[in-house]
Length: 425
Image (tube, rainbow, N blue to C red):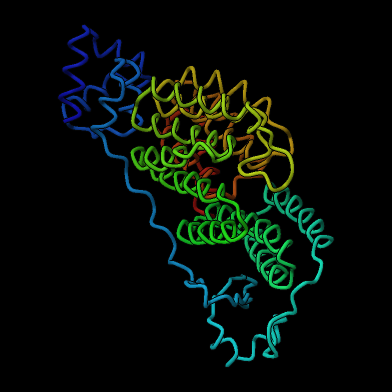
């Protein structure tokens, strides 16, 4: 039991509740109630006490994170290779969505002609498609830029439409060009999966990620399959499943023939898993491995087809700050994130929001309430990147942390604005 182990470890090192309060940034009265069992311990309390008592994650493992909100209902997507017709619908409210139909149903509805898929037979093969691919790459770059500043639910259907267009283009390409076209289609499908996750729909996200793997393999690219594990690990990480995150991230690194970039991104995700289970030494080793892999030629994030973020100059640096928050080392986390967030480019709105909210959380957890409110207020006022299901996970955690200081004027002023963002999701 957490409260028993907390008291045992505190007494073993001769630390008073007052000393623990000062180091963990929780009031002495609150920690006393936790030890007495009249208040439940939260994951943040456990992490802070872990760090204060140097318990190496032993306390964190005794506290189970609250379950995350269940994902939205599963969308009606194609489920087999026979279901290749994707239809986009527009409801009276202007909401768009895609529905997968098998070919027989599509024919009965007369939809093939609407999508350039007539009943007269397949599109003739052998047409040159290379000039068109240059245009699609330009669109992918533009789409990724758009995704930094626009609601993911708006970007998602665009990514799906372009994926479908490339699939059709691959059907008419010569054998030599077909593989290249499918690989590019896979990159659009993977980005559609990311936008689905940012919209809060994990199941749709994983479906599109799997579709990207299928197209990439058909095009001769094995890297996407391992990168899909990194993406799945992101879903488990935001569900606070440290062990699941570790399993997926390690699995993505098992094949040395996979690109250094993908293995580096997997090592970075592994570090976040170690942080969730409270293992600082393993976390640092994974970060060092990620840095080595990403700087060995795999860290060059140039071109629209690059896997992973292309907007963060030092992905290991910002993730080190991220991990320090989960390890309960909030003061050090705030110091690192202050430095790393200042280096993020101005056009990386989504990245600035993601790491900016975690930076504010680090300051709030370390007792710098006024500064945390100032940082959060700037992010909310700016708005860019806040419309993100993953960012809202930390925004919710920030709000819960600030409510410990509900009588503080800056918190009273900021709280309704944070709730407005959270409830407007």
